[in-house]
Structure formats: C-alpha cells, structure tokens
Image (tube, rainbow over all chains, first blue to last red; front, top):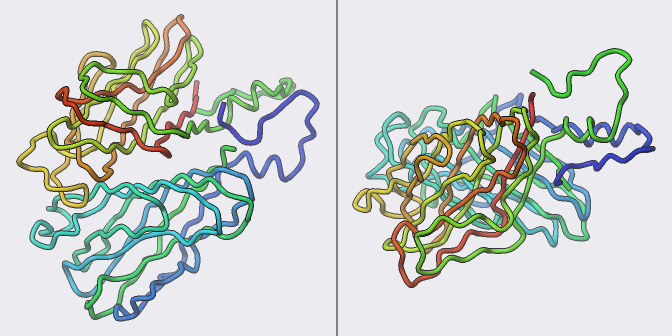
Length: 173
Length: 171
C-alpha cells in the first residue's frame, strides 16, 4: 500500500511521523511578477517544498497566471534536485494562439512529460487557471522542489503568478 | 465525512491510521498494448477495496499511441460496486484533435463497466484524468484501471511511467 508513513504496531507517535501523514497545502499570499522579457524564468518564491532523499511525492497545483499582453504563452516547469525523476501533467488553455479565444472559449493543452521540461500554456490577460499534477521520485540528494514559470520568447509586459495559487504536497513513500 | 470515525476511548491501531491516509499508487514501469482493442487491466494501477466502504478514486495517466490506434479506458470493479467516472481527456473526434498541446477536449461520464471512454492518442504523451466516487457492496475486491487501443493497430500504445492512482477512503 503506497502510504507514508507506514504505521506498525508499537510505533511511537513522533511529531515528524504525524506531520508526514498529513498533506502540506501551500497557498500563495503575495503575487509574484516578472518582466516578460526576462526569459530566465522565475523560481516561485512561495510554491516550493523541501523533499527528502529517497522519498516519493504527489504534487497537485492550482495556478492563476496573468499576463498583461493577451494570447501569449506561459511556460511552466519544475526546478529539481539532482537525481529526481518526474512525470508532470498540465491542463490549461492551448498554446496555439489561433485556437485560444479567451479563457472561457478555448481548445486545451493536455501535455504530459518530465518535470524539468517546460509545458506551454496560454493566457487571456485575466487570471487564467492552470491545473497541474506531478509525481516526483527523489534520488540520493534531498532539496527544494520549486515551481518555475516564464513567458514565451518575444513577449513584453509583466507576467504575474497571482495570490490564491495553491500547491498540495502528499508524500506517499 | 472523515474516516475512521474516531471516538474518545477508541484504540489507535496501525490499520485505522493507515485507513486515514491518502494512498498513491505510482506506475514504476511502462505497459504496452499492441494490436488489441480488448480492455486490459493495468499491471500497476489497481487498489484493494474493502466491503461496504466508500472511496474517492482518481486516475491520472499518460499515454503514447498514435492517431489511428488512439486509446480507451474502463474501470473494473468488484461485484456490486457502484459509482460514476467523471473523465477529462483529448476529444475522440479525430478531426478536432491536433496535438497534446492543442486539442478539443471531452468531459464525459460513465457508470462502471458500462461504457468505455475513448480518447485521441498521439506519438507524444497526452494524459487523461478520471475521478469517481466509489461505493462497494458486501463484496470486497480489487479496482483495476483498464485500457486498450480504441482501434486495434499494429503499433505500441504505452501507458507511461509516473501515471498514478490516488485513493481516499471516507466511509
């Protein structure tokens, strides 16, 4: 059974065991903005967690992005410690401009791939929702797993990850 | 409704503590179907269900296929189990599908073991999300995520590593 911690008769209720048995929920309290011409990407200042070596985590993200310029792409990926393997899945508006009319009328992106590779998603100038799921298997190195986002090449304006974006982290091994 | 229903004086047991936890079943290896449209139980994405219990079960699975074979899904549940799958994935209308990053989507539902749900497949991974409220009868057993090619084709349709099932018991 893939749960963590794995309880056994005689286990002591340590603070760390009890903490580990509850999902972490991180909700952003401050908007974070980036000049859209900065293509290096932003390590999110709130959407990260410390991952233990050898552990496995499920991370669910509910993100709100706002880019003043409409109909442009936002790239989402993860910054990972060495040795992490991951599968990332994101559901949001299509990256194809012609098929993105608005956040209420659009084709979608259903991409899946490794967490360290970016997925492109669209935006209509208002807070646009992106739902994500990622599974991380840690290697021998612990460290922070951090959401990274950046704009499409050539876009101008300000890209903002808004208040109320949420990350739910469940350790399961 | 939380489960177990803790009361003052109740004995804390490993079983009860485990039942409180969210289970995540992650696939550690790919699984391949070639030239078959017969629903096959996933080799890793399955879970044991207790009798007379209720669960929320989610499946998030990524597939590589092609635009001829595509893929389809179903859930196999113990006798008497009831529930409805709520599904999100790429449209099964070939002309409305362009790629994993640009497609119409479908949002169907299906009672267990009644309807399979078909999706467009691609040579790059795209994913499906399926969610169900599951109520078991007096029969315990195993819930399997099942899948196949929509059209039997001599190509590999591959369920990807890292696909997962999330299970929470609540009654």
